[in-house]
Image (tube, rainbow over all chains, first blue to last red; front, side, top):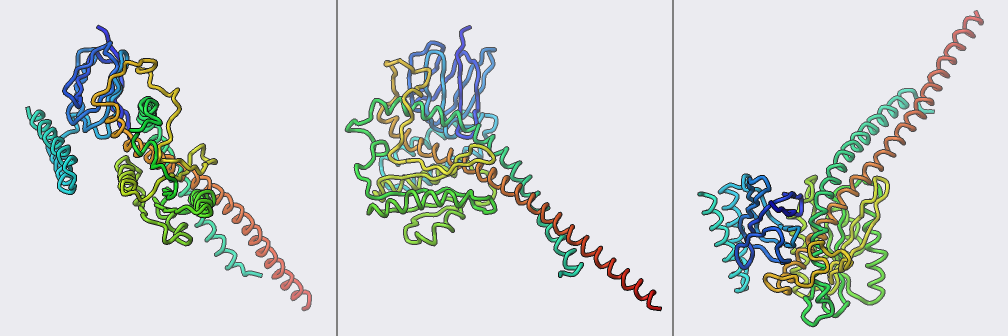
Length: 133
Length: 296
C-alpha cells in the first residue's frame, strides 16, 4: 500500500513523524482525508481531531486547536500551536479550553472576532461530544 | 602580618565560596543540556514556519495589499526595542552584553538621529540595567518568572503585547535583542528585526511545494498570511528565548568555572602563606627555648 511521510510538529516538540497511508484533517473549509499523491494545498485547520492511519493499519488520533497543514504529494506537515495526543485529553482539560475561549470572547468588543471565537467554542463542544463516544 | 587564626578563617571562607561556585557550575551544566534539547525540539516548527512564510510572502512582497506586519507602516520614526535578558546575574557578561548592544548600537544611535525609542524588557536584569538611562522610555517589562523553563505560551504572551501596541500605532519598527548560543564559551548578542518581518531566504521553500505553482490555498492566500505573520512573531520570540536560555546557562557555566579555578588558586596561595607563617612561628619558639636554655 502506498504511503507518504507525515510530520506533526508543535512549537515545543515534534508530536508525530512517520510513514502513513492516510490522514484525516479538520480543514477550515471542512474535513478532508489526505491520501498519497494529493495535490499541493496549504490550509488552515480549525479545532478538531486528526486521525492518522498508519501503514500497519493501526491508527492514532491527535487533538488539535488551530494550525496549518502543508500538503504535498509525498509529504504532509501539520504545524499546530496547541495539540495533544487524544490519550492525554480529558473532559476537564477541554472544559478549561472552552472556558478560556469564552473569557476571550467576553473580553473582546470586536464583533467579527466574537463570531470567530463563538465558532471555536462550538467546535470545542463538538470535539468534547465526539470523545464521549 | 595576619595571625594564624585569620589565615585559617580566610581559607575556610574561600573554600566555602568555591563549593558554591562549583555547585552553580554543575547546575548550569545540567540546565544547559536541557535548554539545548528544548532548542533542538523547537527547531522543526520554526524551520517549517519560515519555509511556508517565505513561500507565501514571496508572492506578495511589494504588493499593495501586503499586511502591515510584513511591509511596515511606511515610516521609521518610532522604534521599539525588545530586550530579552535573564532574570538572574552571576552569568558573566551575558546580561550586560545584550543590554550594551541595545544601548550603544541602537538606542543611542536612533536617539541621535532624532527618532523616538521605546523599550520593552523581558527579564529582570535587562530592566535593572536599562532603567538607569531610559526610565521614561520603558513602556513594558516582564519577568521570566524564576527558574521555570521558557515555554511557548510565554512567547505568545510577549508577542501579544507587541502586537497590541503595534495595532495601536505606538511604534513603526520592532527589534528583538537576545544572545545567540554558539558554544559554552561563545554567545553572541544579536539584534533581529521583528516588524516589518525579515523574510527568510527564498531558497528555503518547503520540499512539498517546491517548483509547484499550482499550490492551492484554503482559505485564501492573504487570509493565511494574515494569521501566519503573528504566529511567526511568536515563533521568533520563542526561538530567541530558547537561545537566551541556553546562552545564559552557558555563560554562567564558564563564569562559574573560572570562579572555581580562581578560588582554587586563592586557596593554594593562602595555604602556602599559612604554612610559612606556622613554620616561622615554630622556628621562633624553638629559638626562644634554645636561647633560653643556653642562657642558663
